Amino acid sequence: MALLIGTDFIEQRLDGNYGTVAQAARRKIEAILPEPIRDEAARVRETMRLLHVSEPLTGLREKDYLGQLRRAILERRKIKISYQKKIPEADGNRKSMREVDPYGLALVQGNWILLGRCDLRQDIRHFRLSRITELVVLDKYFIMPKDFNLSDYRPPDDRNERVLIRANPEIADKIAETANFYMETVEKRLDAVWIHFRVRTPEELLHLILSWGGDVEVVEPESLRCRIREEAEKILKRY
Image 1 (cartoon, one colour):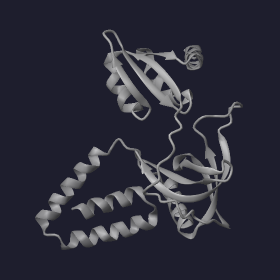
Image 2 (cartoon, rainbow, N blue to C red):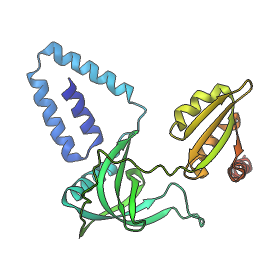
Image 3 (tube, helix red, strand yellow):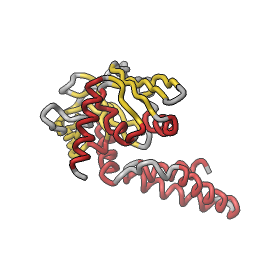
Image 4 (cartoon, one colour):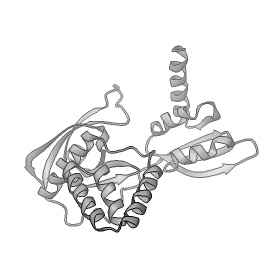
């Protein structure tokens, strides 16, 4: 049963070559199982799928990228990508062209992440595959650092900016579910919950705070208060 669940995962999350092999393996496993166990395994797998229904599925384009990246990593070939950054530059531009030494891939909360050394930044960076709009495997080779091990790798904690919000206690659980990674401390008071966040830039919380609506108030920093006000005014003008 564990092997069958594993084939489901591979077919849904990895590229087409692995998906085809996973289907063949599943058929062979199911063929040798007694019928009662095969039926039970089918019911368990359907139930497990329901538990993960809210996670983003790996799209066809990402699966294609996975196949190319997997081969580039094994062959130690550099890649060139067009990448949509989460936070735009001062001029509003989000698009960036990068050459990267691909070190490995990680599935984080349903999203595939490429870890590699970025030539532009001269350091290891993380790239979400869903934000890659173009990918080319180059005829250039790189040398994997001897001291790099994906299993032992831990990204540096560079979340040095602090944000404080005051929230309606009724949505405290919603905030914890959607922004747990950024949360530092939660202080419960009679009329509100005060939540401290630690981020790389306050902009990282902008869209989350807007999604919480009038049930939250940014206390600090003042720059984020101004950004929330600007976005609220833009929304108001549309209605």
